[in-house]
Length: 291
Ligand code: NAD
Image (cartoon, rainbow, N blue to C red; front, side):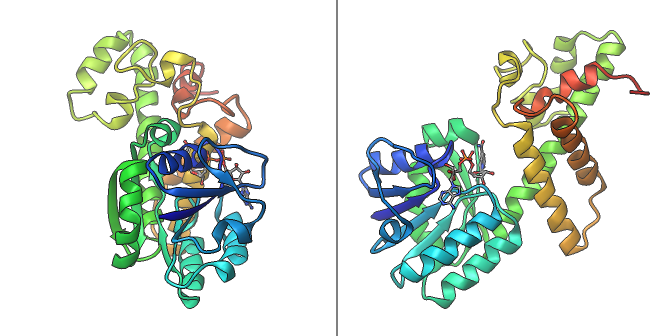
């Protein structure tokens, strides 16, 4: 396929490289000065999208996605696919899809899980929203960039799945960190705590696969001084999107709201910026009930 790829950052660059190395003809564009192995860099939006079968976007947020979509959609071929893999709000995803479809361009929102390592190794999970035809066009590309894709429903459904998943992740990580900090104060050995919880009803991905306690469980960012991994500020973004969606949908999400506020505080007022989101454990370790 002829592919245009816009947004060649931490995630986009390795995803574009994997597509090119699998034999697709990939042209890329980014507002920053970047180079990506086997990807031709275009001078502007018009060049990167003209005549392409698929245009992929991997951008920071919904406002930037809407701005970029406004600039590229008029130059995209009718019947081409706009595949947005960024994590954005459900409303922006649905509105970009409606604008695309009005111009005869198919649109699929397909945010990812798996982080920079997954992007590099081609093992991402894609959660997609859009038509059956759009999903079918995107599927061979998902197979190169990832190991699993789920068609979640209509436009915006991929973003809905992503923010619900990450709301659970933020909540379970905080719960796991709180529990480790309590266990410390009760004199419980961390390895014993892991051995029990990881095989009991307190188990979750947060403890079993991404244990926030250094030297316990599988290797995780905790074993590398909490270098991300998945940065706490990205969790703030995703929990914020979940809260925005909950307000719009009038859903009661008290734990999601508490997790969003704790991560915001951690990043803005404490030393969380640039640390992995599992660094909530040293945060709780240092605290008492009154501080
Ligand atoms: P990043 O900041 O490294 O990359 C974003 C890229 O977009 C940058 O290179 C930037 O220059 C470019 N850009 C910004 N505005 C642009 C514009 N108007 N036109 C063209 N290019 C523009 O971010 P990232 O870590 O690659 O994340 C990208 C998306 O993937 C985000 O929505 C993020 O939430 C999501 N995501 C990230 C991770 C992760 O672990 N990093 C995991 C899952 C999902």
